[in-house]
Image (cartoon, rainbow, N blue to C red; front, side, top):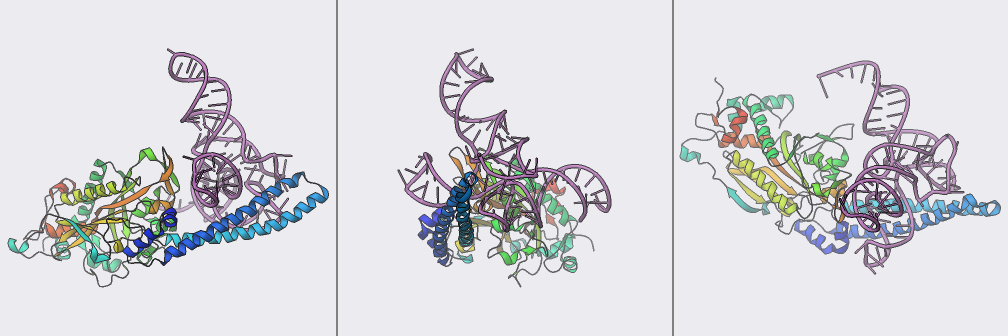
Length: 424
RNA sequence: GGAGGCGUCGCCUAGUCCGGUUUAUGGCGCCCGCCUGCUAAGCGGGUUGAGGGUAAUCCCCUCUCGCGGGUUCAAAUCCCGCCGCCUCCGCCA
């Protein structure tokens, strides 16, 4: 939720922000009107209610005719109060709805436009030249099959398309990645968390996933529960309805959870392999900090993501995502995209978002500072999304004989230097 | 899943049976001040959060006793539903 004061004081800024995302600014006027009628409804209710309370206090001491007359008057007022109260509730709801539908105001630095209007910030490492090395790289599906690491056929048999089993070294690889990610997180001062992946509507709504992204969210039939698409959701709701100690900020969490995505609207895209799946596991960094520190923390999150990709010896680039592709909550977003050899292009592996106060305002998380109670910003960034990371590692570090070299940093966790194909 | 108990402003707690003089009691902690070689003790005051009015951190008002309804002129208090916690039983990784 955007700052209501910003909307009231500088609506043109919000209109401009809508335009930058390629959205209509009608909601701005709707919200402003709703705010005005909400405030007059509040004034009306409070006036009636005040009168009711004043007269009500006289009743216990009144007697006879005076008492009867008071009762008659307050009875009328009670009805008016009730009407005014429901009018106020309705106005409040309209105002909330309008406000909730407005996405976070994109950062000035965020490029305008849609998915293709990103700005390339940096390219790290050089994609491997397999032609120069004299062999044609295998894709992760074939590598996964030969290594006995990924079983997409049985994934489809058991769960349907876009599911998989990680087996043998595949399973070991995921666990090693989790450990490597969690070790880095711990060293960087994060608290490790295993987060629930089923959440109540409040958490989903508060993180902005029930807006335009709702089609991508699994809902448990017959229950008011959703499967999360990222542990950003439980972690943002973790401190909901709390007033944090401002001096204790930043609070940094590294949360492991499975992630579930319907992938509605991506029919035909990445149908093979495990690039795009309905479920994967992920270690996500999630930070609560002050609004003033948020931008600097965003850079730090990006730094930790890059450090992790560096450890895996992957070639990647960093992009500044355009406003129209930010999602509801983010004010700015950096994606790290790793080079996938058989696709001959960069694919998103990690993503760091600065959601400023957007989520905490929806989830009612604040902090007590020296100056008083104030807003808290949240940020999230992928440390390691298992499936795509496995794809990048297998394809990037494959060798001519079908084996895969294990990046140095991963060896202690995996207990081997090379992944060998199964015989036969 | 069954039975019972409980949910009050950071923590503990009074009030709930018998609705109104409660601006929700008191203690602890915390903050400010006084006193005091220093500290402690003592004394005085303050201390839930949100929203509205307003130029305003002054002030005034409204809401807030787990949440949501209802009864009533009036609800922490009565009624209904829900949620959470605890105890016992059942089931179970």
